[in-house]
Amino acid sequence: MLQQTQPDTADLAHIAAQVRADCIRSVYHAKGGHIGGPLSCTDILVALYFHVMNIRPDEPLWEDRDRFILSKGHSSIALYATMAARGYFPREELDTFDAINSRLQGHPDMSKLPGLDMSTGSLGQGLSPGLGMGLGARLLGKSWHTWVVLGDGECQEGQIWEAAFVAARYKLDNVTVFLDFNSLQQYGWPGDTITNRLPPWDSAEGMAARWQAFGWNTLLINGHDYGQIIGACEQALAHKNQPTIIIASTVKGHGVSFMAGAYEWHAKVPTADELAWAMRELSEEKKGESDDDGN
Amino acid sequence: MTTETSDKAQSVSVVLAPEGKKEAQREVFGETLSVLANEFANLLVLDGDLANSTRADIFAEKQPAKFLQMGIAEQNLMGVAAGLATVGFIPFISTFAVFAVKRALDQVRVVVAQPGLNVKITGGYSGLLTGKTGKTHQAVEDLAVMRAMPHMTVIVPADCIELRQVLRAACLYDGPMYIRLTRDFSPNIFSDDYKFEIGKAVIVREGGDITIISTGVQTVRSLEAASMLAAEGIEAHILHVPTLKPLDSAAIVEAARRTGRVITAEDHSIIGGLGSAVAEVLGEQYPVLMKRVGMQDTYGESAPDDDLLEKYGLAPHHIAEAAKALLAHK
Image 1 (cartoon, rainbow over the protein chains, first blue to last red):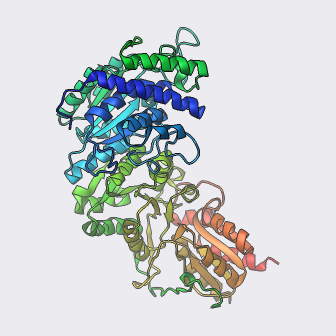
Image 2 (cartoon, rainbow over the protein chains, first blue to last red):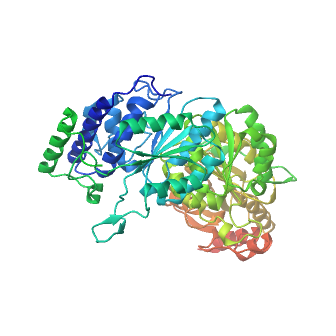
Image 3 (cartoon, rainbow over the protein chains, first blue to last red):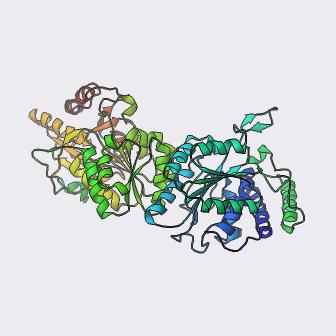
């Protein structure tokens, strides 16, 4: 259930700037990893972990917790940085990202880190276990809600649509999906130029029509606007007899001017200069001196 | 038998039923799970729209609240089961072996085996005898695939006496498991006091001339082969291996030591299944001459059972002939 207090969206934005900075620092430190996708879904993760979800960071296996699945598992660093900020583990552990024996694997591994409700990494697989958690809650008479974050690129996988029709068939209103609609994938299709890479989807509205056709309640929002993110969660929780998908238009690399909207930052390690530049921008955003880079 | 090894598992001698009653594994599967669901309240069956073939429909009729239809969508089926396992259920997946293992292979790997979740994958219609459906529906490489997967327990019961105990053991065991089932009626070989144990092989016939190591229904055909061999004065020693993983390597070495020549028999490709598993163990621990009876790196076709067994070399007389050929090898 949602916290009753009104969220301080400035606070959430402040946390998100730190999470973004931690993502970029961790990838720089690990000399590998993804940046674009983690930055596009950061605001969704921060809203869920800091305001929406019913969780106990000091008791990560609490039976009645809301469940969370990051289906786009390559954005793991954003999840780890958010969980660290929320108190699941110390922020210093982010330095172990991708290192040998780390709990913070390149893709989320539930067998290593308590608090991860599902292992993901092979795209298109995260929604189905979410249905299992939703069906399980119904069978057990439990009120936990299951939240799944999908990428738009992974909606090219057939399993997403298998899960979509089954969720609607079972009227799983205790499962909500965020679709991180950043409109960029690893390489994609060529647009008007070879470097202008495009997804196969025409628009967020077109994507919503596909999910509607499969029987879902669809909401369209700006995925970097906390008022809209939290408002959509409230609508999803209130909606009955249908699962809800919140199609959140986002910008890959959001928060850092030279990463935003650039597909080559899908997975690229910044140089020392780029790191410093990104940190400077995010620290300004954190201070509230600059709050947008154009979404 | 020789008693210099201390391994107790293989010293278990099995009392065989004199006149084996014929039962179909698929029917016993549905019946047994519907009874187990009363004892294990968190048992569920998830169907890939084949319940009236796999006979999960018997379960659906008796336990409708614990039966979840997932439609013709095996990848999602596997993922839903994984999610249910994380919240305390024992989901049994029921579909054909070909679909469970291969259509949903990456899902088995990523959301079941890698996190070690308590999902029981039952592959019906395994091997060559699938009711005239042909090569698309004949799982001849499922054991190779599942055996290679870390965390996966792989079980192939010989008859319905054993199957009942395997299903119960599956409920008591916490972790991913693949249970390979056959479609058609077959005689029971075990008596009611037989005790199945995960990871333990059992001697089903004592003999000193040639060793046959078999799994699944091929153990029944190996016993028939042994009768043919006995008529010619050759006494076969038969080790039934219901658990391909974890493998009872001590029992396999002891069975090989008994005669020094080993035939393997399985309703599966000779690549990657029981024959390979036995060769791996013996190659490292007790090298002996071997011959693998199974599908010879080929796909099947649609035809009556007896014609398939004959053409693809899986009939009892093929096992007997392999034994004689190996004995003739100097």
